[in-house]
Every structure is written in structure tokens, then in C-alpha cells.
Image (tube, rainbow, N blue to C red):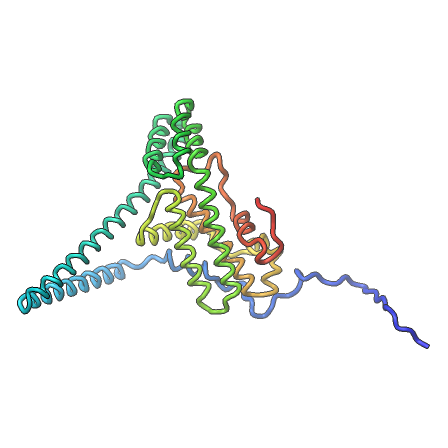
Length: 332
């Protein structure tokens, strides 16, 4: 009579771990992901002939439309003065709105230039230990944030303590501590939110262009909000210019290259890429979005990093993707 019971099977060789499993067939590690496409398209310089073509085309279309509108208004005035007057008022209102939009864009470009000027002068003051230049930088920063209700306490603290500091480095660190640390937290939260959105959509939505469109819109919105947090308030054209500047810097420094460290740092040795192509690309796109965010912080921040340390991509990605693709990690 036989009895049924547990059977012990000894294996001569240890079983392989999931991390050592071969990748699935649909994962192409060499294929550029959405953020690489976005960066490549943004930094591609058009030829001079193409610039002349588009400039002349826009000028020609604008001239033809303006002439047609002028002839239409004159003909309508000759036929019916009342209708002609109504159209004239509408055209004048449209021109006024366009003028206001142009002024707003010019003001946005001016604020971005002010941020860049303050940042460069701060670097010069720290490098040369020029106290007079540092005080000029401090004055520019106070003018930049004088109407910010959320920085009233910091401005008051800065005004009370700035006379006590007698070196350039310490003076700028005081401004950083009283004014920029709260802004850094808000800007870092924007980067984490954008990285989480891009990674989630890439991993879940199976549409071919969904990751590219999501990466484009999320990064544009992230860069614009970071500029607004630091006082840039970039307009539509200013946002595109700022985005191009950030991505050009990333491409020039090789920071958009996809390597094994991107997946390995977040997902543990590339295990996600071996399980699912979409999950692997989601992590990569999220990490590259975080890199864009870190570069945007450096571009939009009026002072170089001193008291506060520059956030790293691994910290941002770990906080942003905690719980989405693996076990949540503690805040770093």
C-alpha cells in the first residue's frame, strides 16, 4: 500500500533569479524613447535657407491677409457705413489684443533675461568674492520678488540680516536660505509630478504616439511652471525658447543618453525592462524627464546652488515613481 506525501527534490544547480531572465522579444534597448526624440527634434538647427523661406512665407501671408482685410473694410464702408464701422471696431480690437499679447511676450522675455543676468552676476561675485557686486545681485533679487506675497517673510528676514554679512559668498547664501529654499521645494515637486505622469502614461497607454505627446506637453508645462515659481513667468514663445535652451544643454552634455544605469538605479538591474518593454520605457522616460527638470532648475534659478544641494535624478525619480513600479522607497 502506497501513501501520498510531500516529495523532496534536490537540485544540483541553483534556480536563476528573475533579474537573470532573458529580455522579452518586443524590447529593443537600442530604440530611442520619447524623450530622446523630443530632445533631438528640439535642438535640430534649421538651415539658413529654411529660415529665409519661413520668414518670407509668413511675411507674404501677413501682407496678403492685411491687404484683403483693408479692401474688405473699405468696400463695406462704401456699401454700408454702419456695418463698416462695426467691422472696423472688431479689427481694431483684434489688433489691440495682438499688441497686448506681443507686449506680454516681450515682458516675459525680459524677465527671463533678468534671471539669466542675476545668475551670471552671482557666479561672478562668488568667484571673485566681490561684495559690491553681490549687493547689486541682492538688490536685483529683492526687486524681482518684491511683489510676491509668499516671500514677504523671507524678504523681511533678508532685509534684517543682510547688513551683518560682510562677504559675497555669505550674502548670497543668506538670500538663498531666506528666499529660494521654499521655491526649490515647489519646483522639485513639479519635476516629480511631471516624471510620474510621463512614466505612468508610457507604461500604461499602448498608443504609439501617446508617450511622445505626453512627454512634450508634460515637459513644456513643467518648465513653464518652474520659470513661474522662480519669477520668470515665461509666455508662449518664451516657454518654447526656454525649453529649447534646456534641451540643447542636455544634448550638448550628453545627459539624454539612455544607459543601463537609468533602469538599474530605479528598477533594480533592469528587471522591469526584461519583464515589459512598456514598463522599461516608462522608467526611462520618467528619468529623462527628471533630467530635463534638473536642467530647468539650473536655468531658471536666479542663484547658483550653495546652501541647498542640487537635486539628483535618482532622488527625484525614486520619490516620483515610489509605489508605481516597485516597492516604495523612503524620501531622500
